[in-house]
Length: 333
Image (cartoon, rainbow, N blue to C red; front, side):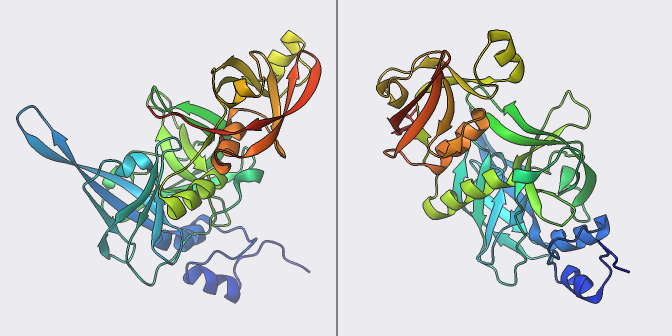
């Protein structure tokens, strides 16, 4: 008799005890917590606030995830942005000063670095194959309560959510979950039941009940690599204002495709205009990447650099057109 999915063998328990998730085996929630907790850190960020006549220091708290043996930690940009001092507390009680490696406000991600040995990096999973309804666990220092990180469990409620963080920032491709996420959870891991980090918790909706959001791990990995290598994210730029095409919009307007991005407007003097793209054209592919929505467009632009020439496939009316476009740089300000 073959027992499938049993996690209570000596090898698996040894991996769990060492903080290493056994590949391809679904863990119980306590096992998952034992695996992931050594990778989760408490972050305290001190920011100087200037008043008209006074200066005071504000202390914010968040969570981070150790991602390699070199001491890099992935967290949220809003946890550490503008901090004059960042202190990281490891699960074993060590308290260390962290340096900012890079920040990216567009995705609300940041990478820190600590000088430490004997670290326990988390495994970053593949978020491309997530399914709505799958069980997930969030771990973080919610409300900065004493006694270690808080654990909450829920499901993936939706995928590819878009959140308007502020007037200038829209975060796309988010995982929505009903696992409880509270202030202090920011920057902490959302994990699947194999103990892999599949999201970085980033936001809640104050008016909602049990609605939280996490940046998907594939997006986080791509941004993290650029932050570690360069200290910033260099994004290509098209010079368009896009609109997501949905199945309902396509049916109502008789469009030739049910996914893609329609061009609401083209910015004169930038790549799209130079390539001859026009208002109401529908972009469906750039290079070898299908452009299904603004989230996939953002991922494409984040992994390509200004100056690259790529093919563009788009529809004008019912006609499919293939062309080339020279990617540009995002204007400052």
